[in-house]
Length: 138
Image (tube, rainbow, N blue to C red; front, side, top):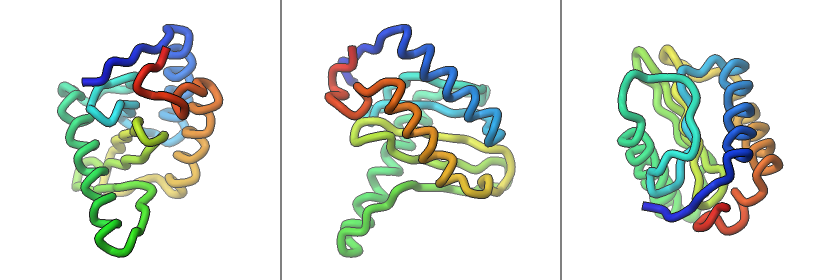
């Protein structure tokens, strides 16, 4: 597991940004996690323990990156899956952090890539340490 910490003021900023984003894209659940599966912040509910979701999402994203490398160095910016009852969108905030977003239904919101990019920019502006040394966020 990671050995980082984050100030409570920063957690408050992150949660406020994630809550506003969640309302605008109508996500059931959003989690910001470290690439080791540690949960940094979450909004919404799924009714299940989110830790396995974070760990498996990390593995899925890393797997997609490996597929991209096999295809000649393609860098995938996100991974998404659509199910009958829920859809998921996984994207990096930086090398060490991922956003995992769960939506109701079988379709992701239109322009999810654009909305996600704006949230990532706001998160990095709010907590610059996210793109600095994420092994020791303080």
